[in-house]
Image (cartoon, rainbow over all chains, first blue to last red; front, side, top):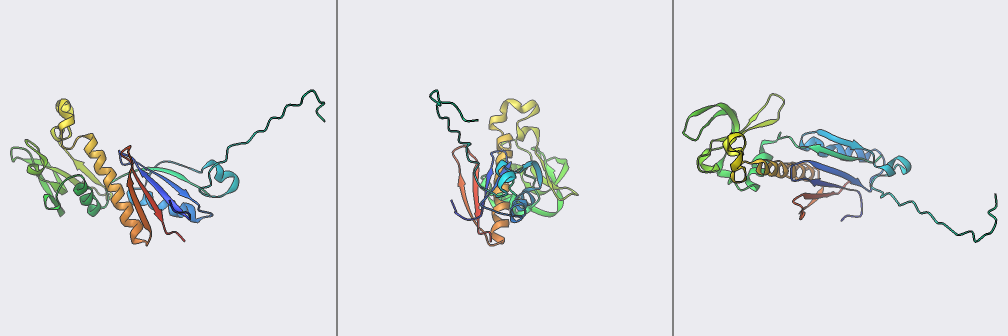
Length: 80
Length: 147
C-alpha cells in the first residue's frame, strides 16, 4: 500500500464502487474523489465526510478510539 | 475535507464495454461495434424490434440463444437488450443458473467495465494503478501518483 496520497476503490461484484481517499489534505481530496464516479457513470448512492474529517479536516486519517482511563479512588476524597 | 463515496456503474464507454466483455469470456472477434444501431435477431433468425450498437450474435451466446446487444441512448448511456431466455428470467427463471447472461454475468460485466474505465482514466492522467481481485470477488484498485 502506498504511503502518500492515494485512492482506494473497491468494485463490488454488482459493479458498485466504494471509493476512499487516503492521506489527502485540503481541496485536492474531493477533486480526486470526483474523478472516479465521473468515469463509471457518475451516480452517487452515498457520499459523506468521514467522521475524522469533521474534527481534524484531514483525509484518510483513521479515527482513533477514545481512550478512557479509570483509576480507583481507594476511599480518598476526590478533589472538587 | 474527506470523502467516502459509493456510486453505481453505467455503461458510457464502448471501448471499455468491449474490453469488459472480453474479460467475461468473449473474443473480440465475437463482438460487433457499430456507429449506427443494427437490428438484433432471435434464435430462429427472426428480426427483433430491438437494435443495438454493440452486439454479441446468438451463435456466440449459446445454444438456442438470441442476439444480445447494448444500444446507445440519447443521454450517452448504453442499455442492454437481453432476452428473458438469455437472462434466465420470466418463464425461464428455472434455468437462470445456466443462462449465459444471467444476473451474475450482467453484474460481472458491470464490475469489469468499472475496472476498465477507472484504470484507463487514471493511467491516462499519469497515475499508477494496482489491481487485485479479493477472495470475496470484489476488485480492489489502489491509485497513486497524486501531487
